[in-house]
Image (cartoon, rainbow, N blue to C red; front, top):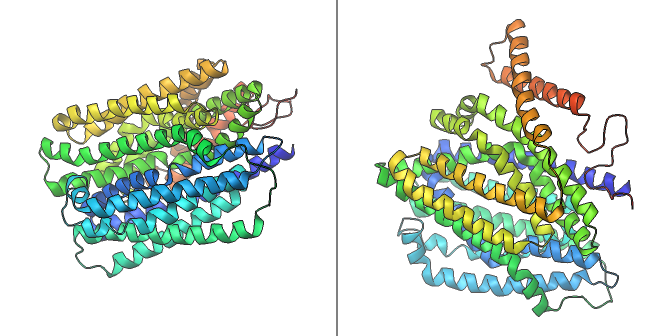
Length: 512
């Protein structure tokens, strides 16, 4: 019961934090778009994609590595998690210095080939100021996540975003007709400020709260590297393929006939408006993903297959129920949302078009957390490789022929293929059995049934559904009706258990 309360509390706290950060991020994107234009947003999106790639290489996917390996260390009788952390920090230092030297040496080539501008070399040389503190921050966040101190990682993320946003907003407000290099520099300066502030906070908390251990760690530095390599490889492959895909979109849009400015503008709308909107309802799942990695890693280290099976079954069922409703909301109100956050008609139309793929996107969050927690990094890396090969192939074939809608085709093809593979892998590995009627068909039927009922109610009270308060009221009533009717007919509550029985919750240890 104590474990249930702790994880439920952490999930709620992380959800609120993630909701705040995602909302603020959308507002920040809308501010930049209105202030600098959609073309500048495209440049910032490309810069962010490359910075993410450089960051993943420089930190070696440190959050996931330290979180999982320290969680496994804590599950052993004789342990020293601090030494595992210091091994992670040592590896990050080596990787960060290597990447920083490479950026200085090849800044001109990177600006010309990846960011499509030869004027960005100076800004690229600023990246180490963000990469090195960012790598160390990722290690400490993984450490605190493994100890189930989610409030620390949440506070670090908030401080990171606050500092980054403040720097970006201040520089943006004072900039007059900034060049491409200046726009790139704005992005990097913001990330550097956020990483430094976050790291400072984490160091202070670690100095105050860390516990001393006298036992010998189960992993030496060389063993840490050998265990971390598969995790690192998965993250680096994913980030590299994602960055390649992002770099190809403006190129293929130009092949379709768009100008350089239009291509960057459309890419900016997609990356800064459409994708964040599609992911926005997934804040609960994103908040849970780090906890899932830690909990499934502990269960795997203890050989508790029944616990892994129970967690997996409940998470997949609840994710599908929630994701289908979210997809229905985005499909109905896509146009209104696109206009509200500054993306215009094009963004609204794309949100509605892409909403049916949302359940697959949300499944990825949960399935990847389970897969990595169970130590199946090899499958994860191969699956990401196949998924991005599919996405890039569709980008190269469809965007030159169909323009902006080719991007939607690439997301449909890759997400359906990749997440069906993940689902099959989890089912086979855990032995769980899914009920398509309860998990898919019934939620789809209930979403349209309750939508029709709420539309009738809104017409009766004289609301046309066009104003923002009316849209918000519609969604709240729709959600309440949807989850109430699902609860009534299936007897399943949010955290497990049947009607009339005590709920054990998703993460609670099953009785032995």
